Length: 411
Image (cartoon, rainbow, N blue to C red; front, top):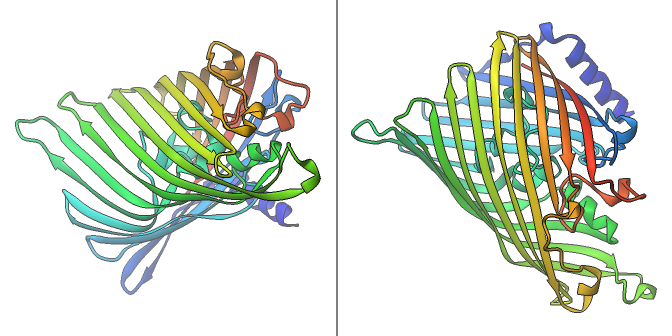
């Protein structure tokens, strides 16, 4: 019944976009704004199943939606909240989440604070990755913005300081954000889903997360460059079946991070109807499982270059090349079950994705995207990257072509 209600709501979104308008009402003489968005997609792959879907048969299990309410209490003080839900194959599975809820006070242009559950600023699009209607592509480059790990980086429960400073001598402007808080991963994300392959079932995963972002709008009109850093101190609690003693049944499982950090560098250039983006992200995680029973060091590197051009008012074309690689080394008594993977030329340790996209803006608040992916490699490892053995029980093929069709509305 719950799923039928959700599908009915999405049908109303998609067949009646002309009736969608932002809603406003007054509260204590202040305007309260209500906005929402929804998207529905279809994915077909010719080889491997992808993103936890049975995509080689064609899958429409590619749905998300959200709604937010915000109010400008004073000229400097704003509050807002957003709820979000999704069902991407075995991800999300219709478990709604409080996406963000914050209070934001800007003292000056160069200094403001916000607190609550706050979107994490990381690269160009981390804090807007769920707002499909803002983007050219049906799927952002998965080497940098993996759909299956959205929950891990999207927000933190804590606070930010931020601001924008105009540089002298016409050298542009610099924007900064620094943050600290608690990260809590969804138990319906790629991490938890992949862990279930190893008979590990999480009850919690998260911890301290802190970092910052610095971006420069350069004197060259349309050119933005920046960098981000994110650190974590993470702990996971679960139960699992010990492969060395299966007769003992499920036993406690714990994981702590010795190191968990991300470096991110990015640039964007916009001129006329053309936009070019490029980003590089390196993620390193050193995790200790069950008090040194297993230590795994994972090193993930991803980058992409993309371009988009608005051909006419309602048609935009785009393309990107996304390059993903992963290595992992292990130690401890259980390392026999997690052998070293260091050769990134192997298809199991990389994903190279060539993408072409057409975005059609049917109306102001309604778009349709048609996208082709041509992937080499499948990156199957102990880290989520789109290809999962649970939905590929016959093993993986080295190449995958995918068709993604996605429509979204917003108000």
